[in-house]
Length: 305
Image 1 (cartoon, helix red, strand yellow):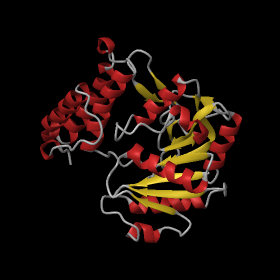
Image 2 (cartoon, one colour):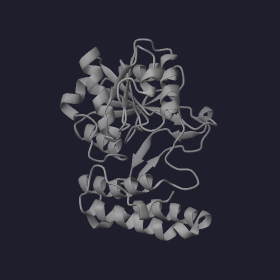
Image 3 (tube, one colour):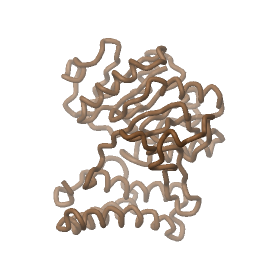
Image 4 (cartoon, one colour):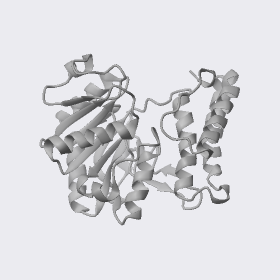
């Protein structure tokens, strides 16, 4: 078993997440930290703060979510020949049985390629308890958002349209068939695409109810980050094209729902930024329609903060 975390700009979060993993109940586990910080190198401040048992891999560039995690998965498999890789965001704190719960679900569901955790916020309310992808529009939706964790009665693994990439167990024996996490999204929608691919090849994606992870999302507060808006909008276009949700423009309802919600918040909080937001969304849609993938620099004139 290997746990893979990708650091980018939040070393305190990364260290806290590593410490939580190491104090968990599942002991047969090695930790790999991939550093996406462009200035990262062996002997960096983050590297020196990590336990000597942690494998540290500086990439020297911001390779994005999938490429960073894939690099960690390859390293873990090469060095330790593990059966599973636990992809875990650095802005998470897993409960002590989180990994054990994932492994138990994987053993109960040998045909599952991906196993996701239940995600909660700092108050114990649900962020993710499975998810759906609308078969017509491709709109993605987390289930049971806002419900208290204690109110969720399901105790056996159950199928979901996709696992949340903040905490996701990957069955490595199936990688020769399903591949690794698609890297060309750079950020957002890659785990949804990955789940769709796994399911299209006949494998399940399930949620492990006994695996609980707290997720402190950093991508937005009162204002969303420009990066968050750009990649969410652009990559919805890419995802919709790949899986046929763009036929007849049905996918635009999902984009409009996302955009209108944030536009209303920005109009109430920082109305002078509405034109900036509109320009950013238009750029993201155009790039998505044009097939732009990978990293894309958000122009200074389109930054929300």
